[in-house]
Length: 410
Length: 179
Image 1 (cartoon, each protein chain N blue to C red):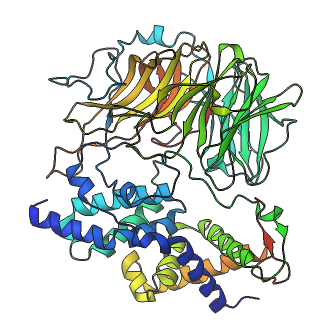
Image 2: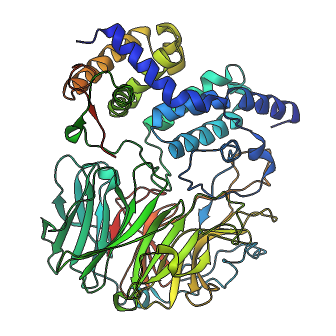
Image 3: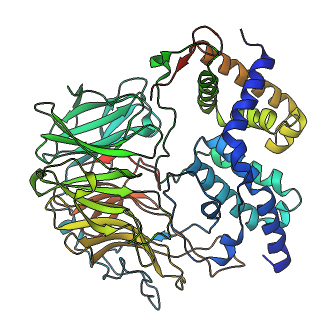
């Protein structure tokens, strides 16, 4: 039996082991006062001295286009980056915007083992699904098939197991059953999952133990057959998306390179894989858009189901002039063929500096992009608030914290 | 912030930033949250520097604890977790193995992360920073009695958690996370 003294000593040793090495890390305040905009970090590598200097003013205002007018900013400063240079979409009327919208979405609670079926129009809870006890709610993943009724959840116990959720057409009843596919081996976790629109295949972005290697698996939900694509290089896949009738699989590869990494020296970015081609090399496909383009950084990106476009969350990470009203982030629609921006669906503008003495400094919180519907026109996003983005028209929805990695699907 | 204050703040951040990062790491449990916490805490301290400069480290620590308690969260990506094994599914290895000691401490840290933030903060301040009860109370803005009761309850909960997991408390039945 441990004495209090033993326990305290063990605790002190554990604390030293975990936190001791970081105390020598240099934290520079210069970033607050001398840099312009810095994106929200998404690195999974241990922080370097340089990355910890990201002590930057972090604030932005979502100014999605409204039905009435663009935000009255005079003069409107053009985006300093490249991926956000396309025109901000002129949204349709509210009635037109919601046409074809899925009737409900499923969202996992961040703190409790429940999933909620919520009305897409109002965010009102239609039904609550109790998830198995013992899961880690923050690690839940959800994906939707194209029929508006079939969902798959990856739940972490922490060993990741997969469940099928069938929801009635009115959303008021749902049934959760275990899928007859094996759980991920202990030590592996799911960064993301995506079920094909026809519900026949489940793609899993797997993070191996240690967090520096990953692979993508596609599991047949009818036969249980598993196909694995892996990479020889360090890095991890995220943001899975099926396109072209389940032939193409999009994924975002993050090799942990610093934000200054050029497209030529890093493989990070949005890739598309032809799943009908032979081989098991994850990087055998083509990269549609690199993580960094000019001063812009892609935070997350998914293919639309037709495979023609990419929906990307982008932030400006460059050194160009930024002032009040400058577009410093948002959701952009890119060509899947060229990677070039087609439209800006939602713009985040620099709007606030927390340090009144240095009003020239701005920052940005990246949008999360939890879900794209089967048409590609209706998105669930989490920026300064959680909500849906219907053809460029943003509507806030209740129940999910802003700027949080929300597990949701529709 | 005037030039002199800015220099003062920068010196503070350079001097104590690493230590604050370690503190935040123990509070938050992962790198990204820790950096986010330190970033925002430093910003708030900078914004109130005329007040914070009196005791900048204590001030910033208090802000860190409040941020963690408020469940402030703008996490972008989930940080990879080195220890993925389910405590109940760990496979046994020989006692006295150095890896088992590491595992014990990982289990301890994991159990620690399940504590309420205030209790966790008390443990970190007491046993990592080696602060007295009174100093801990001053940092957290509570009474010494509260610090004592938090410490007692936290240790009791850790002990309870560990008793459910063979390892620290049962030297011949150590277990190791499968990889």
